[in-house]
Image (tube, rainbow, N blue to C red):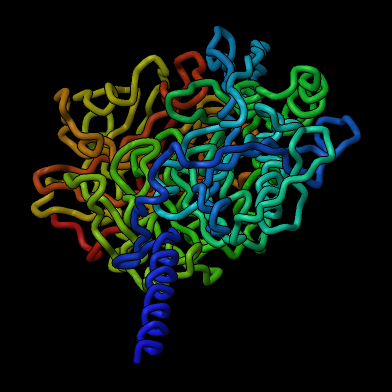
Length: 604
């Protein structure tokens, strides 16, 4: 009996030891389909931080050696002490090591006639900053406590990464691909930029998710278009998905909002923080040859150069799950950037969701949405997120963290409603669902010194044409892409064309919401009436027909408001600014606006 008791006691003690030892091993925890904060991962003092250089498949700085990307790693100590392997949240950027200071002449001068060459601009040098081994602290406090490893890398030709910045060139896609390949054991990492001592990602499960905002949101998509194995999910926030759409609009030279006169070569100078000894070569081969010869500020036409920097053209290999995020009032990287990629990914059959809010540039999805996305595709937890609603939209007066779920975007119940113009546009012409024949034509005179806001609130003006609907008797939900078809003549061979859709009366109060006044906007070059790739001088006085989309939107216009279509020429915030005087004449009978209205009817 005593012998049996001894055996029992020994087995009991071994069981306690084994159980205690097992309990001591930290591991990710999941509740309600989301990774939870694990106390053992939550102490920054216990995180392991180190850097390395990953070898790529390209040489863009002309030194005869494959470029290496500077990479940092932040991971829980248990990846060393307990052999724990975890998935990776990865952000890459050209901004980590600093950017050029704003100086006079950095941007292109926009005060000149259309088609003319502007004076040369200033090329500033970036002073590199940052200390090893930490490239960035972004993402780490969010994801490491939840059971992830966080990795950062500097883009080619920035920081301590070798190569040249190309602003959308192939190396910006292949660089993060190389890092993901290294995380999966398919590429080599080194302890130094030029040495041979290797580093292995022994702590990696090989499953990678990428995220970031603006340029940092572009690069996850760039990596995904390579089809690299291991990149399971991406969450781009306000990404630039086409440099043409960022710097041009329907054939028109158009600046991103807030950066009048910026162009792709300006962005190159802004981010070029790499090795000083390589900058002269990079400037000569990239900025002063490839970018200069391809960007075409004279016509604004779409060409092979721009096509090579449009990620929509590269999506065939893409297989990563996609959660897009964007603001409907982002006039820097406009909402079309996310919509066009979301639409294409959905057509490919990829897992997709889109989160839109009503604010400006930036704004990631709520952490719960991101958490579920990464939990599903990086940890492999079957939380059913792929069966959730496709579209999550923050309504006008809701908190940015509280989106409303919809079956899809655009709203499946939205239908295009055609609106026709009625004369009187120098004051307030009409906008009606019923055609009004024999309305004739009306003329506006360009004056870039007058802001779009001032044009919209003017009771009358010969510098714009404004057509308004009757007062809405019920709220109207716009969801999707509005389209204008216009017939116009110009008094000169070239002219800007700007279109705003506004909600009137204009709310001029200081506390007015961003959604109160401008519904959406669009710009076009009448010289491109045939196609984006072909422009030709206009014959003064001759009428031309063209159609183009305005920016995507999802907005509820309150009853008591009027919807206004404002047509003008130069937009002081976005276009080139020629001398005043160009006349645009609009044929009212042949000009229509199509609005995507939920329910397919307008209440007036």
